[in-house]
Amino acid sequence: MFTIQSMNSNITEQPLLMPKIWLSPAKINLFLHINSKREDGYHNLQTIFQLLDYYDELTFSPTQDGVITRVSGNENVPEEIDLIVKAAKALQQATGTSLGVDISVVKRIPAGGGLGGGSSNAATTLIALNQLWNTQYSNQQLSEIGLSLGADVPIFIAGHSAWAEGVGEVLTPMSLPKHYFLVVSINKHISTGEIFSHKALTMTPLIGKICDFSELINPHNDCLEAAIDLEGEVLEALEHLKSAKNYLYQPRMTGTGSCVFVEFKHEKDALVALDNLPKQWSGFVAQALNTSPKP
Image 1 (cartoon, rainbow, N blue to C red):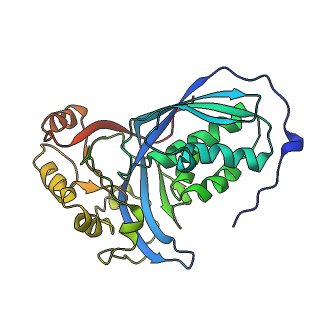
Image 2 (cartoon, rainbow, N blue to C red):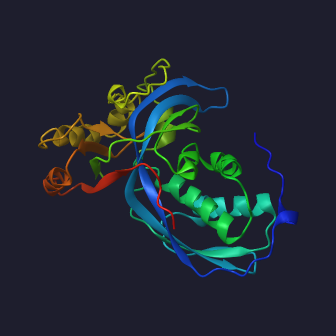
């Protein structure tokens, strides 16, 4: 458990800044090994987080009244469980700031698909409000708050594609090829909790940290069999992507699903594959990012 000391006494009152749009990127897992279950209920894992240039948009308007309000967007998620609101309240409580904020959200990243949209939104909120409220927390302190909200939040705080271990918070930055990815959503949500409690979840022993990227192309995802058992369309989507032309490595599922993806060297090939998607699914083409965009 992390303990973060209030820095209220060090916070300098600043004029409130004008609203600004912050981009909140998606991620995919290039592979996902589940190594063991921890006593706290979480799982140790190894993965590569690849950031993508596909974003939700968050707008923050600081206020003097201390109230945190989601004024638009994300309406299908109750405010009390919205990670954006929870992140704002967590930072406010940790720092003791008297400021509030009005938050607007434009969602593009499919929810419940293994693309990290909620975690990315939480991280973006912590980073943005740390600046806008002038609370002066370090990235390490923000990551500690973020980890209490979700295991994927620290990768978005770090803002760099990375090799990850632990529950996903032990990060080694990586520079990955700027390839293009076709990401496909079957438009169905798979519960992470159901995946990790499923009898078909597999485990993979720890592998050494690998530096040569060519050795890291491992399509294995320990959550795949469980996801297919829960939602057979995942397998259908993976099989469909094998009909694409000129892809680099076999199609894979990201995270605990339900989204799947395939990698291309050239954008034009990814766009052709997107055009050939069955109508019941949705998708997008995005390029690999090594670092998150600055506002």
